[in-house]
Image (tube, rainbow over the protein chains, first blue to last red):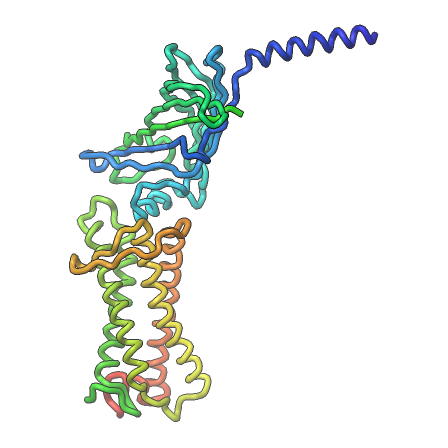
Length: 193
Length: 184
């Protein structure tokens, strides 16, 4: 009996070890050091762009170069931290005309799959919740690099790009084109935990 | 008619500033109310806030002069027919009217300058941004600006009703002495 338990324990331990050998590393997105950003740009009158960003967010991801398809990402964004470098415009974008951040103060993204296409690139799918609406979106991802940093940690970084049709998230104005898109660029650097 | 206040009635300077500020306050309230609902492609979308802000700054300058004038030039005495409660409530209302006007102008200034940009007064001169580091400054200042403006308009209406009450019911010179006369 004792022998049986011991044996099981050894097997379990061996399995656990082998699993953890394959397990992806988990990373915390380095928002403390501001080595991550959520930038957006949107058309101004159809003649040019305006750009802005969300200053406050947090998240983590898991990634292993041996098994990139298992990558997972989860991010929570403070929608009120929107910053387009113009206070009156920011106030307007936060108002009920656009993001309605009084009612929907946070946005979030949680990945549901990663289609790795090789050479450090792939398409991440996941659920984005914005203005209370949850929709599946796709993000083009490229792995930029990873390795030790000079201060004793291990870092891994990605670039993500996607476009959202704002009407899909209940953001509409009579004077905006129905297919108005916002383009997002996501700089994600994580510190291995 | 005298420039300076008399014991029985107001002088020209105080009267002009009083009605100037009164019309400006109601005008700015109406303009502000109207302009926030303009849509992006409206030709007034940019000029209306510019005018609102410019007049607001000029109102601030006027209010400073008015306050200085009030301290420098002694206001008329209360009428003997004014009850004690009327004197006290009028005093409180006047202090609140002044405080609200200054509070509204200041909160409006904090909205427009929250990102460090100055306020341009009719492309004539600029008022620099001084306070920019309050968390969510433009949102908080915006809420204060709106509610304080509503309270101001409510109090101003009360102030007007008070003046008419004195004129029509009490039949005293409270209103006419603000029009430069010492008789009804």
